[in-house]
Length: 329
Ligand code: ACO
Image 1: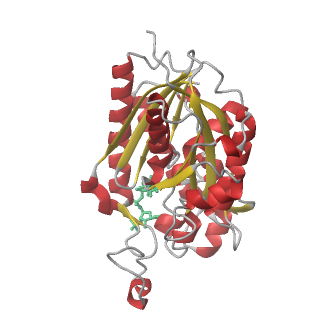
Image 2: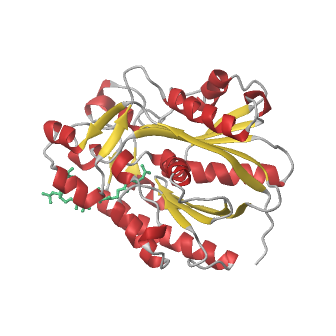
């Protein structure tokens, strides 16, 4: 099968804060155990932002490395797209703060709110912009400081999330490699299953809103689990069918890193052996929109994602949002 490549990734990097939080640290603050967390989620370590550190700081660090790898200047960037649900402030877009910190004066900048699918939504938008010929140099990021919206007294959620940012430079394809196909989907019927109810127009700032803990992330874990397994499996099957590519031809599956059991179920559904599935959830926890670019960068640095490999990226997140991007790296 020959594919028409419009855009390709030419720079890829990530950044996480320095402060580590292990399962043993959680044993000290909530009623949990290393055994429970490891068995149910696969997680061991996450990184948490220092006081005063903001989402745009770690995004900027990741972006600087990706820009350097692509061999361009911040001034070359046309658009900055950031997937985040934990921006620096309510508004303006955190992408604008990143623009300022990078000195990317010629770029337009905006955020996307697609939760854990933010990076794949961003890649899809970048591919579309490049396909039309409108822009040439696009910075796509997923970056989160989930520690800022987590209730560290709620054992059902606090152990799951970490902070981090990943960045990619997307440019016109050289004709031999790049994004083959993207599928993005949403199902708003499931929006309440994973939500931060407060701090918006429904529950604006008030003492009552804080007392009810509506400013924290809330999740119906088991329902999210089931929906994630189904929707990620469906989108992965669909993208492989539509591109007529088989899982044998794929070199690597890089799924959203929320839980090793969800990842195993996805791999089984598309008959992908686990040795071709990249998992780093034990080292970072769930960093939402940042998991896929962090995992891609590590896979590349470990030699598991090589130039011209066929690679499938699959995500799900609050919304519900779902994404799949198939590319020849
Ligand atoms: N330590 C010890 N016990 C715990 C913990 C914990 N950290 N958390 C929950 N439990 C307890 C529960 O209280 C419950 O006890 P009970 O029966 O006495 O009430 C018991 O463990 C079982 O709880 P479940 O929720 O049924 O556990 P489950 O096996 O479903 O695992 C988990 C929970 C890990 C959250 C799982 O449901 C999951 O991974 N869901 C998907 C979550 C996810 O991927 N979210 C990210 C979405 S991405 C985004 O957009 C941000």
